[in-house]
Length: 242
Image (cartoon, rainbow, N blue to C red):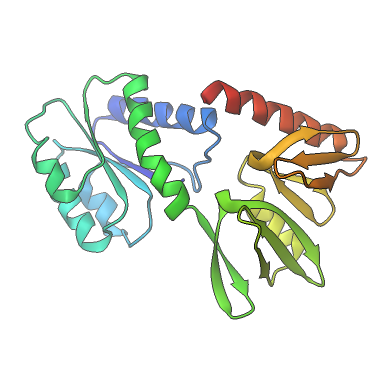
């Protein structure tokens, strides 16, 4: 998840950054790249581009252009990113609809309120924006990460198995592909050439992972302990956040 914070008050910025980081860990949604912090709207807009961020938190009262004007300029470039306003007054609540904001947080806000805002924004983003662009047989293709159940390296390419039962082929080396996928906590390396999405794992058996669709994926004897620990940790955290 790509998230930016535009807040000129250092204490408020650090509080929000810590809360967003906590939420990302509790919900197994990595901040890729790291959380971006800006002090002014001008600083954000200086290098802004379409699809650069999934969610942007905007303080309204800032030096230079305010958060509402920053939002208008963002919308001229990116019409899809989620905008969350953070301010000490509800004066601009109605105006926030003009820039298609997703949430309006009044200071001081609780972690629970912030979590609600992030979860609402995140639901659509995960399906629409969290993807990996990979080379395919007929050019580049988007792989929606939460639709991948497992992958295998065969005939010098990656076979990607999807939730709907279909398959896609990616022309990449296994090491390069694995490095991309394993930065997300729900992907696990269970066997040489095989990655599994733990969101679709049901149980760990003696030498394999059983997926929710009944598929059995082998686990390397050398990797069994690490795979089991990662599966148990993921399952525990997933249950707690449901």
